[in-house]
Length: 131
Image 1 (cartoon, one colour):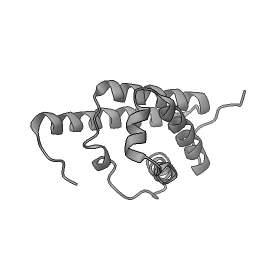
Image 2 (cartoon, helix red, strand yellow):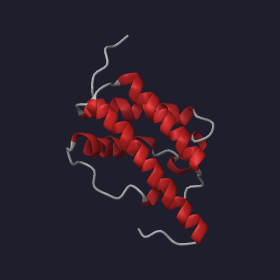
Image 3 (tube, rainbow, N blue to C red):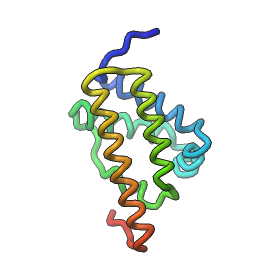
């Protein structure tokens, strides 16, 4: 069993992202949604996620963009976000421990809440997301 450490480097972010999305792709609830949207662009998506988490957790600003718009019209409900969070937290706990690992779990929870809120708002109000 490997000794757990905190998320401190880009390589740690890659470990988090690769293992998390490995679980996502196998999951019967959310895997098909991701595969339908990403299709054969998984390497590109993973690279973007490395940069996103590197920026969010390590304050090394390599991600530039707006993370919500690609998610705005996904066919998802809170149960999908619950599964996403379960897999994310499970992955963090399997590989890391410490202050930044705890922050990763916290930030993922806040993102899930906000993304779900915005997606449901657009669905229920027939509003168009601003991109």
